Length: 491
Image (cartoon, rainbow, N blue to C red; front, side, top):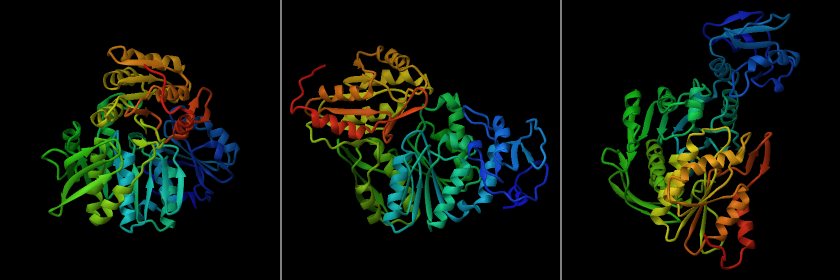
């Protein structure tokens, strides 16, 4: 594609060099550059692409997109394009390169601290049950047709996103359900994408290592609705009144209060499923979902609101919701024991509190919590999560999560500071597998073990960027096979 055409939509650009050259492909990672490529220098969390311009040129880049305030060293045969924001520029040139695939799809965006993944799965499965060709982009997998691609982040970088959407167009998808993270919105990864419906699930403390304040976090979430035709929002969330004032498109609410347009009654929750009744088209319907927890009701109401707007029939909605399974979201591990083990992605104070409170409501025995916190992430949430575990769990095993470059003992100490504020019983076991084993060995009949933090992840990230295999489902099953019929360990 000609560079001249590729950069046509870039505003206030300054061009140095020849734009009548053919671009092979676009890259923002200098290591992937090949002869004839356009290199877009963007600033990441740890690296600044502007520091790799020379490497990109050496590898064969013939055009470079940079920030206007960056001093360049003009080179023979290299074209430089200066813009105010290279992230927006990357989103624009990527969309142009892949022939604006989002415009050929009906995009549904979901944002919020909790519930994005489960709600996305629900919407996707209902649309599939309705005969609609539907792709999904999210935290666990990116799927379309018979393709299932493991996700590396909740919302891909704009170049990767546009390529994925182009593949979905080529696969004849009609709808795409997308988890839209606050990072993606703030960093313009989804810039220029139009959504027919935007969904807000909730807002609570998370990612403050990046956003710094809850106001910034809310403002980032609100950006989704600047490019949405319609907003479906949780009427019960404390941030909803503020968000409503920021939304200019038409809005509908779901929730359990009187203000909601779509709501549930006669809610029943146990350790295997959720059941509730709701009126749709003046008919009382019973909805059953095999994912325990009160938050499942909210996720289902959001999914029902979206798919009803899109014309899904009630039969398709009921069948899809009853059969849905979401990896690492209140996922029950089948171990044929008298106690239960749930794996959940809860990795923030609010999500940990939610699953512990919900489990306490229906648990017949004790609730044992196993969790840690990620390294090189929000430090403030560690004692907060420790305090929550101490308050709501009957016993807590503090362990590692993804320590990354931090000292695991320091992370666990931060958590311990919070749990010490409570009367909660706890034990610290650094090795996560041994922590899980200990929790299972002290569990008795009717107890529920919640292994929180990693959810769908099948690995641990250790110091030196070391990534080791760590599938908690298999670990739990292996431990269960080795266990005697009756546990002998106690608190």
